[in-house]
Length: 369
Image (cartoon, rainbow, N blue to C red; front, side, top):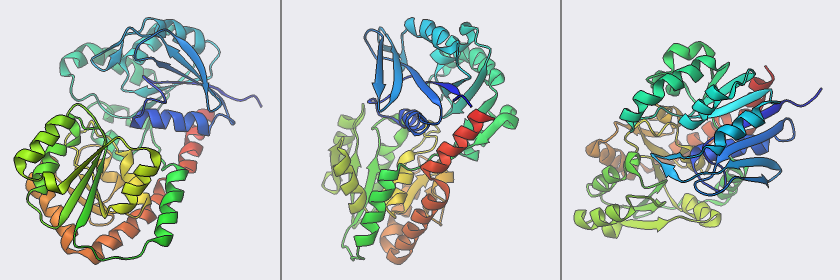
């Protein structure tokens, strides 16, 4: 039997880092031996190039730059039309308006799969122009993949297409799970005077770090490590000083793999204080849970509260609620045994629900069906 010819289509690809880019790479590299897998993306700027990355052929369409978070690329339309001709399946990762429009104009007649990662939340005016094209692709799609039921229920657009939706949870990368297991084997219960909180992510508007800084000021006996960079980094540093909490907070910027492993080991609680459903899942949740760490997350209308469960593997609070977040942190400080038990259950949930092998197997099943 010939291998299925698959073309994954997304905005960007490794070495660009982001949740969607990581999922595209995981699928491409994880299924490259079982399918004839190629990837089409854009460059942030520059001429078109073709590369082979870890055994996967990656086509990068030339771009004049990025506007409203979208590459300006005419080459992308030509490349999609050309590459789609012999493909059994086109697998689009949304939201990506350029991809939707290119599919519409390509004349492609084969099977189309969408992985719906999140609604577009911020750019409401542009959404009015884009929505008819997006709705066309949703109707055109044979299957729509989502990571949790929350992606369907919390979406402004997916509920009417729920009959073609398939839930495939993301998987934690095996190397992270292995490191988590190694850590847990050697970890000893040590009583600490201060509880260490960890945030990992881009410092951007929907992540809720401003709310987190205000909550930190209301709790004693804690310290916070912020890992990541972004447009709000300087503003957050200034706000920490203004709030008088700079002594509690360590801004670490972007870390390498070894350093990131260490901060996951060192923390007691992972915090994902996101305030908008642009945060659709929060892959870092399952990474922290792989290390046996409880999570404080927010009750967004997305997949976030489906990952770490309230009062089981952590605590879930209303988004953009400083006092509720402070209360959850305080609870973690005061309930050491329960906090550690939540961490154990978090690790168990990763083993049961968020395995990479399971994710890849289910994606392959969708391709073959």
